[in-house]
Image 1 (spheres, rainbow, N blue to C red):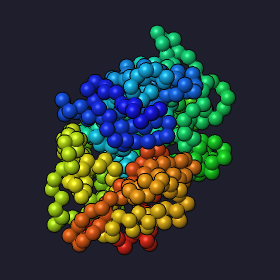
Image 2 (cartoon, rainbow, N blue to C red):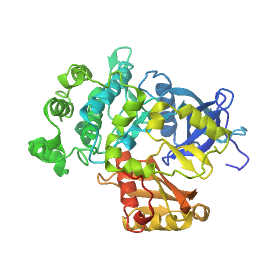
Image 3 (cartoon, one colour):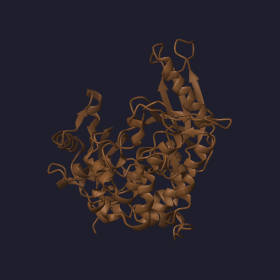
Image 4 (tube, one colour):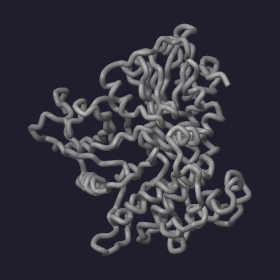
Length: 463
């Protein structure tokens, strides 16, 4: 690949900066100036050595996702493939132009080990099940339902994303069993831990159950659904119901949860049974709620914990009143809804107000060079790896990699920049997750701002 190669324009959208990097693929912000539109473009690089199996999986992802049109499925706009070794002036790869999820990660808005109230959980469970019901009706199994693949648009609607592990299990009325073992251990159904073929739909229903649990208590239920997990064993024996956080789940909510998380796929609730359950059909005051109240209810646990007061402190008196450039104005305009503004997804920076969908951010009263050193020291002491090239270090940014309580890898970036506040020189830090559970990433952010070297400098909103 040479430096002369560039990115293609797809449907009038030009690729800009990287907004996500999972290793296997990068996601770029894409801008269409003629319609003042913003999208996301997922790029998977291709080389002459790219395995045929990977090419086959990419083609399947494009074909399947492009046909899934539903309110609660992230919209697939278009795609383009640039073959390696061709005379094309473009970077070789598979490009997928997707809807920009302006509300960011849903689970970034939930306090770890707290969760949301039952009405809020029901509100989003209905959207999740509606999207999944449609996906299954098209004969598709997602196979990777987990918190990091649940996004929000700029109006607060849930969006199921990432169909990289999907499989077509039904075609022209003929259903087949699946054999491939895939997914992340904390979220996979127990039948995937055997060598036997498995039915497709119950696997996704199990994923819904893990997400349901995460809504209710702000954590996932176990490391893996096998006998090697003490928590899963306690679940099978029934002992876990008297132990926090399970002891917090009561009545109809618990009844629905254990029926969804039935270890036997034959007896596990189906989607029609979920839709008919008393907890699912009970009336909710959130049905016709407005975007402002929706955002407030969703982020209530973050407000009560003080986390939002750190992400958005009182910076009155600062002179940040201009935007950076036309692209930034466009980005803000596309995502600047009542929902995203109430969620505080906009930050004051040295060059103006910026759309920042990551609530794992903070301001500090010391300069960027010192803050960067303090953060790296704190993360290193937590056993989290920080890696920075010479250029990254000069720009006060580092690649972060760690393993969470569920033995799952998380990755992302720490980026620190200068920020002048009324007290003098300061800093603005964004901790941007690329891979892993958003709740685990938030736990790391919270531990960072409470670290002895960092905490004295963190600016907070007065309660």
